[in-house]
Length: 453
Image (tube, rainbow, N blue to C red; front, side):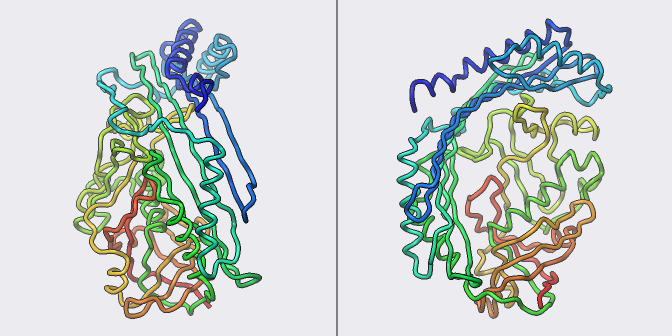
């Protein structure tokens, strides 16, 4: 990283920006205010068929200011190099004209995070690679991918690195910041040609460069996944057990996270609204959200409102135990916030962090053997999951299996059910691969409708 970039990613600079914004807000007549300053430096490179297609390098900086006048609030974006005083005056004028809302307010000082130690989370390795190094990695990814027998083309390989700095300050006394890094690479393979062409991909993303899965493994995995899909055909309509591989199971757990999100619950736009204390998953299954996972992709020392980050069990032993709440949705529901306020430079909103599934047993192969026959889903198409009604219908592709063994690839089918029933019947494995911030294992669900020819 260059000296200029080091200066650009300065926590001292961001702290000064937020303090200037707060001072301007108070001078303009705000009763209270908070501000978020972000800076980010990123580099990426994309290669296709041995040719470097695109190299990008970007520096971004942003500042958000939220002001409060009584029970009224307004949010504005601020150019960090612009006139903060005039923007603050405009924000206060906007707040005075806004409708009153006593659920939108700063955190109580007693609830703020203390003894903040971002270093213990190890979410910053301080490394941003050069575009030349990333291009070389993308070439190695493609080389490994194209040497898989049956791979006929490349849909591109990419490598990227980013380092970001964040500072949050508020008139309730909170002021702190931290750095993060993200390193990733992805390979996209093509097998076959013409109308019989299949695509698939694989990737790795980590906080630390040293933790990335190596290029050879990622490239070869992408190639094998594309080749195994060749000659896929629809199957006849039937009711069967459906098994989601972990990459797909992540989305299924994501539907549950959407249903426990405080924004949806407060609007009663969730099938799990009013269901705290009720059984939603099988006995023994716990869904844990932990913002303090060391090197976790969503780890953070405090949330977007300055609250301490602690682990919660959203579901504990099959029972719905927590909603995911920021301060506003917590107040609307008559509850206490649990430090899940996510924030760019706009207003906070509730969002889960590092989510894991505990209490499952077995891997994908054992779930297939247990089921005997069924559909292994490796791709879903569309967004047909309604967390209000529970209606679920998605286009899908994957593999039909018999006697626990894959028989043939299948495509151009749909799977359908109801989320409430799917949650209750889900059988979780324990083979979560750690690919995403939501780390889900393979999941088997009996009795889903498969729509085919």
